[in-house]
Image (cartoon, rainbow, N blue to C red; front, side):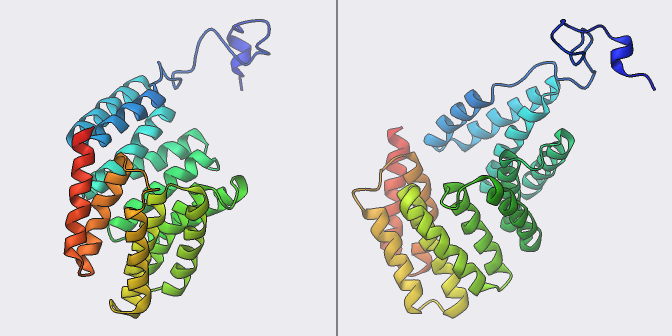
Length: 275
């Protein structure tokens, strides 16, 4: 069988026969500016412009596909799956997840930290749309890669623990979930944004409600801890706070504190309007 070296001319004498004047038809025609795309996307989220964010991502998805930039497209699909999940768009979120997973295998980068983060986000899509067993498989795959490449106190590990615990709760495995939530809380206390710690406590409150009842001491303690963090002057009132506050508000309403839920919604709205 002929090797490309037998019939293509090397691009330069230092290329060791590995680069040629004639590229493979599978090579991308160009690349999308992933870093700038993410920065611009954040500007949409900072003002809660979800329609603008979706339109923006879909335009770049088309561009990445037209260029054949598969690695750039993985990043776009990763953002799209999160966007569609937040918008409750199940079919679109699942399609973006499956496309990203396919591209990871196509590009042979399945054991990288970047791929693991895509696995985590795809798993969160599965969990959000009633597929906790499928989610847990991807969380376990993510855990293996993070364990090989990241320190145990990395914020990415805290996110993995939080999301894995939620899937375990859906499967009725609350003792295992409790252990992961406690580990996540320890990491967020030291190495993450204060808001992330509040999210962990709210998630734990829902777990204890399912496991031991809404009026159990642990549920009340977790919601009190979340409120303390959200009210703390040490917690920055930035766009991320606005996002977290808007997501935590329904939980406070659920647990009977509608007045505080309203306060959080007002804080969130004020931050978005100020941006």
